[in-house]
Length: 103
Image (cartoon, rainbow, N blue to C red; front, side, top):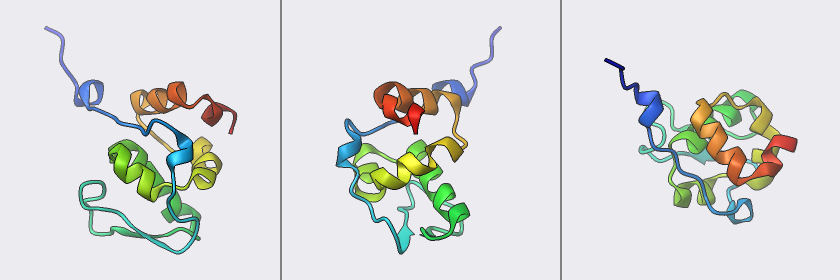
């Protein structure tokens, strides 16, 4: 009997266009509880580690509406090579947005 693993069925979402990403490029970013349910939901975008944690959570667990509101296109392109994402999630985004693979 084959085991079904959560990582193989978890649904991932992405916006239809990177141009719709209108999130802030600096300052503090507060993630909704539906994206970040840990003790820290506010991230300083000027701190590389915090920015990457926030972007990883948004790409992995955000809805397209949340992603469009909170992700910044320039920052996403800059951070993409450094985000540690589930393979299926990364593949979805890179197939939809080939420019991420050249970032």
